[in-house]
Amino acid sequence: MSVSHRPYTLVAELTYRCPLRCVYCSNPLDYAGHADALDTAGWISVFRAAEDLGVVQLNLTGGEPLLRDDLEPLIEEARKLDLYTNLITSGIPLARERLARFRQLGLDNVQLSIQDVEPAASDRIAGLRSFERKLEVARWVKELGFPLTMNTVLHRDNLDHVEEIVALAERLSADRLGLANTQYLGWALLNRQALLPSRDQLARARVVAAAARDRLRGRMEVLFVFPDYYTDLPKACMDGWGRRFIVVSPDGLALPCHLAHTLPGVTFENVRDRPLGEIWEGSSGFNAFRGEAWMPEPCRSCDRRAIDFGGCRCQAFHLAGDAALTDPACSLSPHHALVERARADAESPAVSPSLTYRSRAAVVPQ
Amino acid sequence: MIATDAKPRLAAKARLRFDRKTSRYLLLYPERGLELNATAADVARLCTGEHTVAAIVDQLVEKYADRPREVIERETLAFLAALADRALLQDTT
View 1: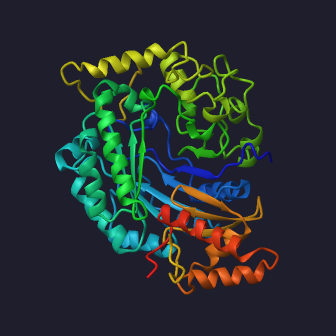
View 2: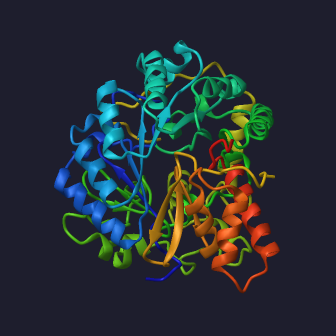
View 3: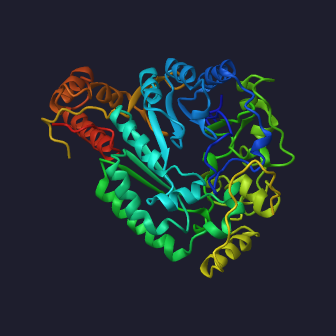
């Protein structure tokens, strides 16, 4: 295997089902059309094949992974394979006894989403009364001896609360705080007008987060992920297509990222039909945007092409209509005006736009 | 800077794993990992809370007899500082 692409992380999307209805959910809009096709044995063989390819990190995610009643055997197998196993969860539904079992079985880390610092604001984004229960889960996580990652997705309604979010993370004794700005794809793209912050708001939040990072260094890791709409440089999405990550969807599709199957004309294969190692190495989907041969100008001759890999393929498709274009987040993209217009709208917000909650109802992307 | 009489111990969230692909040790923690060279892996293995920094350096000096003590000590302190910076060491009292 070439060193240029070795998977280090398997993102196991165990189900798209979720009790929350977050308005920025990154699951595909048609998630309801994907059944939980992989059973326990199916996932275990995915874990084994991934470990064999070099994967050392396992993210158990969804949807809400807690809705699977076979998390216990999955965690047990992951530990046997010596995978560093991270449960990415809303914390709902969870009983303390189940979390204690996860601990005994060798789960390494719990990453808990908390939407905001006030119950009403948090529940409004989640579309479910959940804030107080999340705090209780956070306390159990620490009492049981897990490291706790608290993750808060940032947008225009909570970016002014970063100081309070940091304080909450400190109160919960989080070991790590992820302050990740919304990625405007999936449901977040539908709700972009309501969620995209202004430049000033972001700048203020960044200063607060940087101060917290310095103050808490060595105790709590504070990450602040700036939205690519405001960086003028695209992000190295997934560290490059098919380089470091394998995502497996609930129905068994092996993907380079969690939205790759929304790209038309790119074929992805199912772990039930072909061994994962062959899919990783040889499938047309994983090879579609590997390397530089696919790149258009301005990427092809750009100094940063080995740094950002041309940005996000899904963003290129969902904003500009073609996955093989330069990510419009890049200021050199011929389609950058799409991002500039969204930013301009965020500077002069109209009446507060309504939110579309994640739901099973079919949604036609605009 | 970590005192030479401190007894460093890896944080609960950090786990050392041998990597068959590279024959190196990886220090894994949530969503991240550090690929360790041989001496760093030796240091990480000795971060159990039982050994002082000075004792760790002594052990490495013995193992890598061809390398000057000052260099080993400098590398060890730099590696421990990098771990502490990432909150990968527990309180070292």
